[in-house]
Image (cartoon, rainbow, N blue to C red; front, side, top):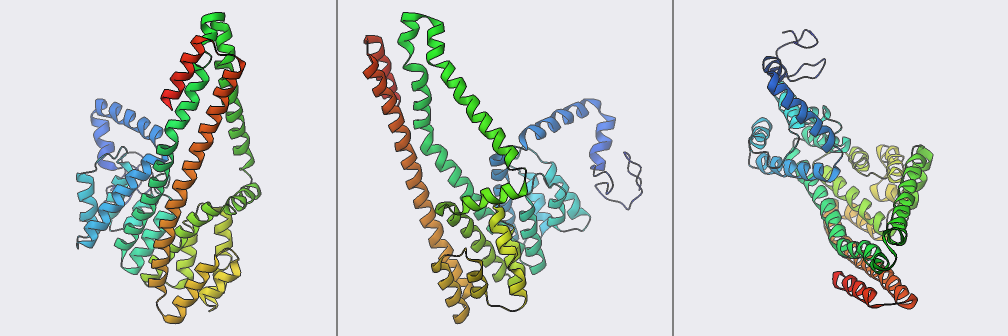
Length: 378
């Protein structure tokens, strides 16, 4: 068969192995220009939405949950994926899943189809699914990925929920409190006292963001920042929980300790943690115990080291780590909610100081009304 776009010769298949097009769709667009225009607009939508990471993570969570349930029920991968495509829910970009379908049609595993959409499926997700396919239990990996995404989404939504109202109050106070200036001194004075400081604040934040992005382009700088981040207890707990959860799943699936360790290390988005864990893989390959290797890294908590040691000695490492990570994740969520509530108090304190300043400076009747409005919003 010859590809209609690049003329590459290949065996029959849904997708061209050279240029990657879905052949049936390409031919349909050539025959129907109107559909081609619609497809073009759909592609532009994909470009706009692919950077919305939280939306993609919600889509991935839905997909992983679907595959776990169907595979657990005994349905094969091709039928499970086909059922998902038939009812994709709120999936905005179907192309990555169509590529998986094409790979399955060629007799390839799901992980190979995921690898064809690297900008959509994170590399460590593909590695986990591939490990599950090699061990004969991909359902367990789909379930773990769903759990990891579920926790991450829940954390982000908790932070947004807790901080939305105080942040909105702070923003409104910048524009509401100077309203008397608009009445007494005109628009220019009002802009100077409200919009100008706000614009300067935005400029400072944007400049700091750009400078930080430039700073992080160097691997050495990125490693330094990630190492400092890892010193933050709550962040360390989150990253270690992810590592332990994935390692436990891989270990339970029968994958060797060294390979499970290396694959679980790739799940972390912290370069310092990744490099530290990967550098100790040779120790595990040489036969060193898991507890000794973990202790040599210098990044495991004493509690986790005790769990590793007790689990290896008793032969119940999987169960011990499972109980540990469940308790640690519950503790993390409690700490996260405590932190967000403290940030809310800090924002409230800033608003109170600003309102108090306005009162000390002077409080004519219009200003008392604007302060009351800010208090009502908060």
